[in-house]
Length: 241
Image (cartoon, rainbow, N blue to C red; front, side):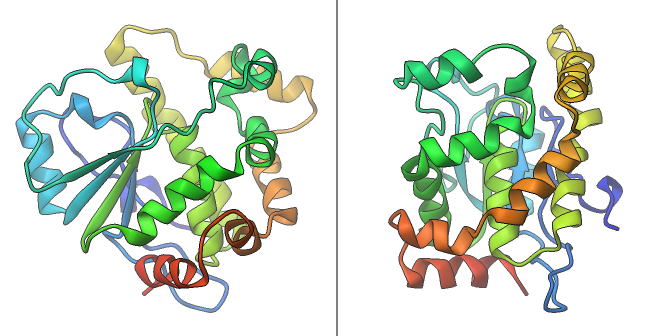
C-alpha cells in the first residue's frame, strides 16, 4: 500500500500536499506522478514553497474555495502558473447547506454522495478544467486539502481505475497533516468530533468512501454532466502512465 512517505510533498507554507501518482489501477498500471497534486490552500506558500511547486512541474492551480475564503498570497505567485478559480460549494443552495454546512458531518465523506447528487455541474466543471489544462501538473486545493480536494481526488482516482481501497487509504492520509495545519493556524482540531459523528452513524470514513465507490460510475457521471468523451480520455491520459 502506498504511504504518505511516498507521496507527501514538502512545499514550505503548506501542510497537506500529496501527489496522486504511484497508486495501483485495476488493469495493472499506476497513476502518473506529477500529473495531479492535492493540497491545502497554496496562498500560504512561501517563495521556497512556490519554487518547489514549479520544480515539481506544476503549471496550473485550481482553487476550489469560495470567494470569502481567499486571501492575498504570502509570496509572489509565479506568472507562468495559471490559476483557475472554481468554487466547488454551491452556497446559494441554502436548503442543502442548512443540513450539511455546519457540524462535524461537513468534515466527513458523508457529504460526498449527497453533494454529487445535488451539484453535478460543479463537480464536472472541475474535472473538465483538469482535462483541458495546459501541459504540466495540476494542483487542486481547498482550505485544508481534505474535504473538497478529497472529493475531487476521489473522482479522479476512480476514473483512472485505482483500486477502491487505495482511494480510501489516500483520503485517510490527510488526518495527521490537517492536524498539523490547524495547529499552525491556531485552530481546534476537528478530528475527535468527526470520529464521534461517524461512530454515531455506525460507519467510518473508509467505509463511507468504499460504499460511495461501490455505486458511483464516475465515467457515466461525467458524461451525463457535460464532460465529453474526449475530455474523459484526456483525463485518463493525464492521470495514468
